[in-house]
Length: 328
Image 1: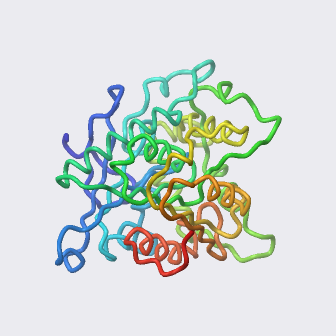
Image 2: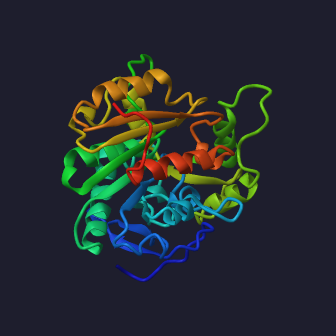
Image 3: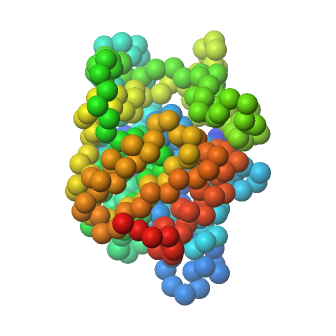
């Protein structure tokens, strides 16, 4: 791996560039488990897979009130890895992100993203001298994770799907191919979607650090403040995959998943409803165990909210195999 690039996302974890498929490097983070947790041998490893609009440095590795989700995972005895898909965060942008997106196929569709994920998985397994790695994926990232887990089951230990995008059968959605290569996403648009599922009149649940988070997110794109309003160039592939999934064409087949699988989601999440979770559970017939956990007072962005500590606990319990609730 090459030298460490400047990390502008508020994360103090070391990271470096890994050659990825298609000639695009991928920025990879690594956090060892705490010394106390690893005194009995090698710690189990988890690889975080981010969602459609912000990278690992603004999610699992971002410190809220001085402590990140990665810190919590490491403290429980997990070795934590994370990476940014091409076009996001500290990974290089697609060359097409410097040009007019019109008429360009959406960048970073699920098959390409899954290939990037497999590349990182293989790297982690090699760095650890063999074994398997668990995947912790959020939102659209669960599509790439499901596809990678189905293709390479020998690499995946456990699969934690946080707020997964699942198959729906909606009509009238746009053609995924019509979205263009990338789009500009503003802070206002991010904030609106972050809070839209909170019930009317309920006190805010989004972190009080959102304003600083937003500035750090803008910093991930060196051109963000050249536009008015400031915005981040965001690959359209994830959007295209979500539209396709909601039109009945999920990019992976849940029947092919062989790893123990857990769905965890917030009670207010409109993108992963009871019906969505139940449909996915019904399709996970190849998984030796599968379960669904709903956390009170959370939305699709629960890891940025006041209920994040409950999410941390449930994630660590499942990833370490210490869950006590009944499983299917």
